Length: 243
Image 1 (cartoon, helix red, strand yellow):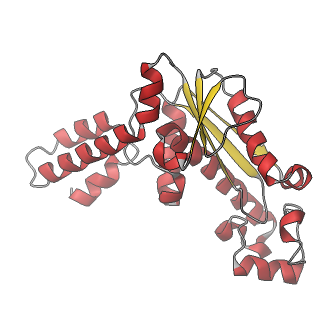
Image 2 (cartoon, rainbow, N blue to C red):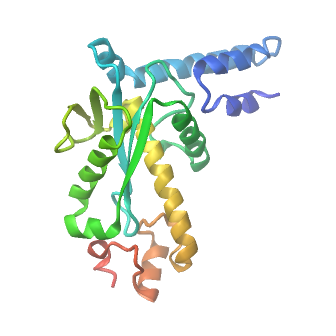
Image 3 (spheres, one colour):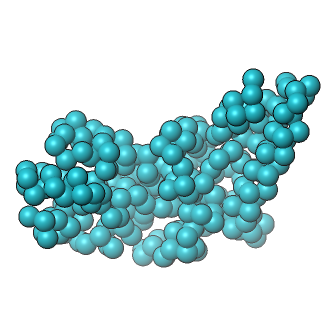
């Protein structure tokens, strides 16, 4: 076993489980280096929990985070996620989904869903986005994802802006997916869910490269639109300059 191999094993495990795993290698020369790594990650995650800790200490038991994926693409849905984490769960590597590789997001996706109090997603189709515009679709997706949670949160943490129509207290945090562990968790389940949907669309409409670009406006994607026209999952209000 090497330091790098152990680091990979730690990923997506709880901090307590990481310490248990490491205890089996207490006689190895990399033991201290690994323990320093776990302690540093623990400190990072505690900082990422500062909003949740404050709310918990002021009487809020169930704290939800919500975030969306797919605001900017030319094709496909927008997907919002909502997650209520257990108060003491700190999973190695959890972060803003944009800072993680696809493999790491997938590992954390499974861990979050397996261990959370509640989680949900809501999808707004490309046609709905064209009808109500992306800003309204964004807020509606997050509102619906929160309302679909099996447990009703005492407080909701949102990324960047407040969600209209919620019947509960909420706090908007600018760059929340980098500052709140609950919003980060929501960003991961939203991103993984949407990416998997786009992978399915790639099999249906292979000429657009959705498996690689996930619907975003890469040059390859734009060239495909100009060559083949649009397909049923394109956002007409987003691609009018290319058709």
